Length: 166
Length: 103
Image (cartoon, rainbow over all chains, first blue to last red):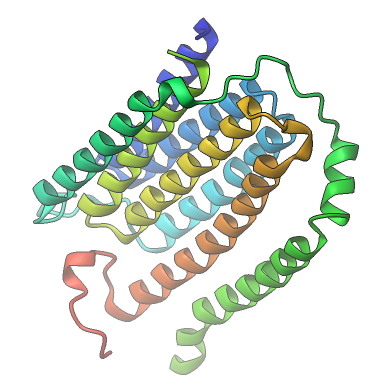
């Protein structure tokens, strides 16, 4: 385990923890951006350059901006008077802890069986493009249809009420 | 601990943090943030297995992660659109206050 990995893991987990713990929703969105950036750096650390840059473009460039827009449009930055956590927060925390216990137990118990190839994979963007329009062309088309449908759907869902009140 | 086990532990922690956020926060946008963190933890697992698995040149894990990123972007757009619409309708994003489906 390299020193860089520990730094990036700490950064990502601290960002994620802040994103779900902070009171002000705008601060949560900023912490979420830190977590996404840490994940992108972890991808780069894993020699997955294309996925790392896609993560930066899609998550930091689009999803984080969308979240900020949604927070500002819904006045979500005001802290509610009865707290930011739901009434059943203890049960939720217990479920999350149980899930982590099971996942951690499974990983630590199967550590001997995990693959550990040391050779750095040589993957160029050209290879990824060839794979996208070759072997993975059907998923690519389906994702294109899904993104179109989601874009139209999001616009229709967000526009509906305004038309009705006119 | 092997490098892959380290990445898997980090992904498990990230998934649990996202799950805790999705289950404990009141604000619907924060619930969506928790779901995004869980999706990202799955992506980290896919990339880590691709990197340390036996056949990285097949690009399977990488492709799965890229498609997962695209699907997560679509999910975020529709989810946040729904939250905005619910806020216009009910004037709240508090999930505890949304206890009926009839408008």
